[in-house]
Length: 458
Image (cartoon, rainbow, N blue to C red; front, side, top):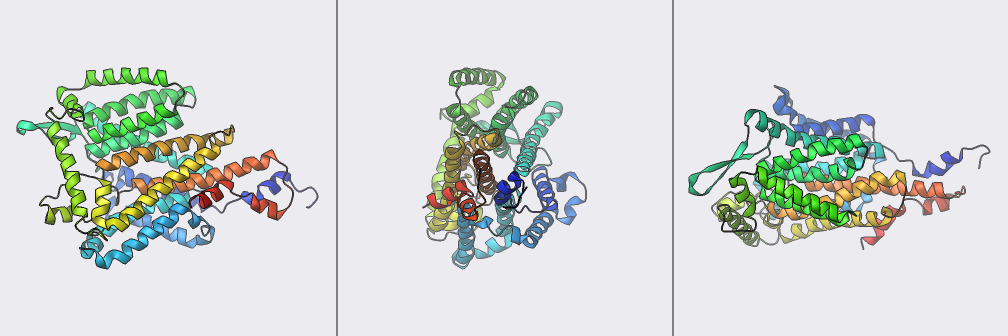
């Protein structure tokens, strides 16, 4: 050991990571904003250059040029099962019912979704970048909710309507004119953003608490206006997970009663009927809820007509049109998997979900009891991710997802969070002991959490 060598430099040398360039990261954040806020619709002439496709191609090229920095990151179990899924889609393509539809119409949408996993896992490679990425993502989702709500309050905007018995229609709040989300998708966005605000914003200083208390009622009121029963169920899952993790269960229960009473006081009779139809089939909205359940059963039956490899990626509407006589889908991810990928693809995708959940649970076990300010952000974000997993898993009963971004973004965040938390734990351990200059000892103690994840998957 050289005389006078700084101990901190020697201690942390084994934990330095090869980060991708700052330009790549900034371009990725721009891609996130462009994807969710739809600049191509908001800015005249901007869509002509195909900005989303251009951003995906540019980021992919930049990552390829920096591939030497990324070679060790593909060993994650989530990455490996995603590669299995992609390989299966390619190999099974000649055997599906409509391979031409997959290539002409559907593969582009799937690629734009699955890149969220690769970009997030590979580019978000420092704690600071993770914090900024989460902040940008949450800002975009909050904006997508507050914009149509503001238009509703100031201009009477709704964006969608639902059919009632007797030939009448009721207005439902959907995404803003520049957005593409319907009322159910807007409800999904609301349920997604609430865990981030609760676990990452509320525990901070009084200004953050004030911001939380201003945003939360607006989000809940917007959910009422959507009349999204799926969004309401997703909110119940989030509320249960928060209640389960909280030490203040009585206070939360009392607050829940207040919120429910206040919500029913601001609902119209039609909105009340819509939400009550979840538990009362005799209401006016009960018929549509019953129809949705029957639609799910028919879709599973449709999936079993080609049980091995399915009809092809993205062909659920086409299969329903030809074999059931109706293109309208019940929006069930699990039925969609069976219809499009068959039993084999169904199992592969569920393994992807299971591995994501397992990594989060192992990480919670590893860092949950450690009292260290350097790990607080990881602990809180882990709670967010666990909450989102169960919410996504339940809401996927009422929402498609194979060619949607949300599960892939979730997987990418899980990989990034696990890797960075592992590094932080090991740096903390280095601070706690005086490490000798022994390369074998240093190597044996690197990335303990990552190694646990690697071996416990068996």
